[in-house]
Structures are given as C-alpha cells and as structure tokens.
Image (cartoon, rainbow, N blue to C red; front, side, top):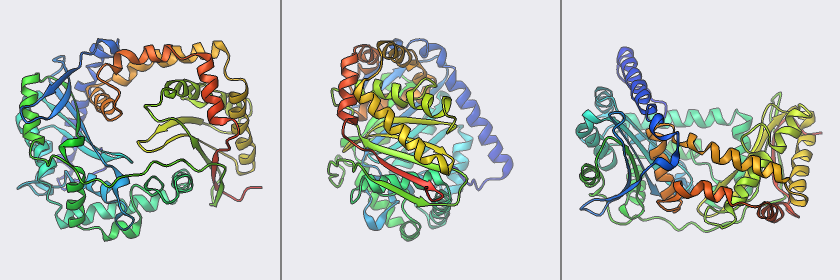
Length: 451
C-alpha cells in the first residue's frame, strides 16, 4: 500500500496500523488451506445480474474477504504532456470520495479495519481491497465510493503531487532507479513503455483534478474489468456486491491504441554518477505470455539468472569471482512487447568484466544449453515453489486477477505445473538460440566513468 500521511492523530494511526496487521495475520491463516496444494483451489466464475464477471475462491477458514481488480490501460495511456497522471490517479482514489473528505475517508477506513489501495503498471490499473466479513456491507460501500465518486480535492491533490515529486527526485539519486529509467528509454524510444510511469517533476507539477477525472473516465470501464475474490463470501452475495461496486461504470473505456514494439538491442549507454558501485541493467527481446515458447523461456531463464542461488549468472559472477552481492534476470511479458531483463551492481573497475560474463553466459546458453540434470532441477524448483504464490487471501486474489489479465484460462492453476513439466531440453535450447544467438543485449551502466 502506498505511503500515506494520515491526518489523524498518531495514536489513531497506530490503531490503524495495528488493525491492518491483524487483518494481514488473519489473511495468512489461509495458508493452511491453500499453500499445501495450489491444485486444491476451486475457482468459480460468478456473473452478476448486471453482467459483471469475477472469479471466486470461496473459503470460510478465516472471516475475511480479499478482492483484487484490474482495468486495461495503465501508465502507457499517459500522454507526453500528462506523464504520471495514471500513477497520480492511483494515489488519489482513497483521498476522499462521496461526502467524505480525505481525513474522514481515512478515518472510516480505520474504523472499519479495512485495507484499500490502488496502483498502476504499464498495461493495467489495479485495485486491492481486504475486509473483515462482519464489516463487508460498510467496506464494500467504501470501495464503491472510491471507484465511482472520488473527490480529487485540492488539498490532498497538492499533497500527493508533492509526495510523488519527492519520490521522483529521490529516484534520480539512486543509481539502480536511474539505470532502470535509462534502460526503458533506450530500449523503447518513442514508445509509451519508454516513458517514466510516475512522470517527471515538470509534468506532475502541472496535473490538475480535471486531468485525473479525464484519466479515470478513460480507463474505468466494464469492458476490460477483471476481478478476483477470495474469502468468506458466497457466489450469490458476491453477485450483489459486483453490481453495487462496478455496475454504474460505463460499458467501454476510451483507451488509446498502443502499438506493438520490438525492444532496441545492441546499445551501450553509460550515465556518469558519483557512487561507490556501478549499477548494471540489461535487456533484450523475450516472449509474450501467449507465445507457445513462453514456458520454455521461463524455465531457461530460471537456469540462466532466475531467483535461486544455483543460476549460471549467480554462480559465475558472485560465487566464482565475488564481483557482486546479487545478480539475476527475469522475463517481462508486456501486452505489446516482451523482454528478458537483468541487473547487478559491482565496483566501477569490475563493471566491464561483469558485462562480459553476462554476455558469455548467454552465448553458452545459446551454444550448449543446460544439462539434463540442470533442466530437471529447474523444473523441480519451479513446480515445487508454485504454492508459495498462494500464501494469503490477498495474494490468491491477485493471482486470480493476473491470470485473467493474461488470458490464461480459469484452469491455468491446475495446468501450470504440467506445462512446466512438459518443457524439454530441446525446447529450452531452441528458445536460447532464438534469444541469444547473434543478438547483443542493450546494457545501461550508472556510476563512475568506465575504464
């Protein structure tokens, strides 16, 4: 949840924090019923009388309800002149709605022991809600107000703009954040994916309440709405709630069409920055989520630089040479492009060596691929660790929404581990050749001048 400067007294803020921790603690109790086996999850498709569809995992283990939702159209819908407007919108929806100003709205959230937050990605706008079952009538009304009747009052708007601008200034003083911004701009020049999601100091300072109203009208619509719900609520009850919260939204949004784009490769950009460590980030084309080769690429990336201590990059850069504390790579399947990205940080005089090693491991993957044992170890880890994505009601609701935004089907959770198991050595070697053979990644370094 975004940092919030509560207007309430400190004692009140402490009570809200304590209440939210209690809510989270209850949420994690669902681990016992789900995390043991993700295949034990039964997902129902619920359709309201008003035509709103949601996926529901009904569970009464603990008396809480978690709901996540997403609209198509994230920060890529910002225009050049209004960069950061979608992000600012996400910070303002719980700063007063209906008859409640910011302080009254926050006080009501506290009284009801509920969690409510909003965020934006490149392609989607997200909302997250969590409530005690006993308070559901009142808490769903708060959600309805935030979605349908936000106030965008002048005082909170200026406060959120100041907070956002402070965050932008801080990020420009962090080499890793500066490297990320530079990499996006370099890989996606002249495309919305290359622009800063939070905007710039100049654009954010000029945003108005009318800009937020226009962006909300553009994005908030029923045609792209995806909803995941977990917890102590029946399908019949949920159908009523769906109409109450979302039925008054317009049928269709007014999204600008975003073109597909190929990432730019073979660029080397250095940004001089006074820092004891050089931040290194890299990217090259990956696979979109619907590509039949995505799962092979997913397993291949785990072996190359995925999140375990056994990856090739981790072994070569940290274990064998001690060049960096951490190094890793990951797939980024956007709606209109796809990347394999990675990062590390090392001493300025070792940055060139670290880049050479990263390139060498990509070439090794393209030329020889993993061993059969490495493939089996990767598949064992990826299937065994999948249940960790279901460690709380809110994380399950987030998974349900994410599966829908990616169009993977209501049976994806049941099929996912079988898809990983079906990945073959030749499949991994094929995607490695496609991704790395003859393709130079784009590298960005931020730190002292390279030797």
